[in-house]
Image (cartoon, one colour):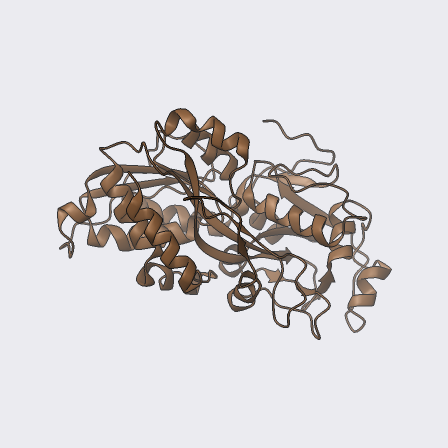
Length: 382
């Protein structure tokens, strides 16, 4: 799908976070992947040989392909490293080419699982029918994290924004950092006379779907669009992947964009606090995002565990711009050759060890009750 947009399209810079991610993954082995390729792909392959603490029957064997969400790329890098130290007979190769591309690869049967920051639409489930003979595609929540609002405004720290102001910025209605609406939220800040440079994803993205869902739920009059994996507004510039957005914010004065907190942390990028109606603006942290996800409800049916987030939460300390990443798999009809490895890898990711291993990367673990539900569905995969 080709994204239609106005504004100047910047040439993509490969940011430090992308380089770090690529080097980390490449260190595990070859990054060859039969899924659709991307310059910002994160591939993960075999770790250095070592003693295995699990029986081969528990690990499976061979090559396991996945593709999709860049939001979880840093988490997958860690998971693959840990899993392959335990199960060196399995090669896990994850191509972080965006949720939309990952789902397309899954629907065509090119990968065993897809990562997505948004649950499947009915049309996606229908399109995946041939990839899941006798079964259906399902969403398994795997990890959560805040979508940070990263900015590059010289001399400004501790920036506070709210939903209406964010909506006007990303819809091209507020175009300068010294705008009265931004001043009202930051009365003690020295805001420069500097043009705002907004950046959004050029590729289909669950991160975009979640960010636009937040704006639609909290500032519909200023952002009159529905949630969408493709950026719906006609203003701004674009870049591919979360790493591409982070690289632009890092290098362009006046820039603002949205990406997972792990990219802001890795790039040392300032992030805005969000005024939600609680007693104090809320910082983008894993703990604060976790407080918002505690409000989520399961809306999937059967084996599907899709969640509905409350973007309009005003709970104290709850950061509202939050996402859950899903691993999309077939409940039945998985390929016999890769099913043992798929179940073993997913079992590790949802385990206490797997969930805790990514805490330092800006993610938070699933609630224990949801972890148990995911583990039960993984056990039932066939």
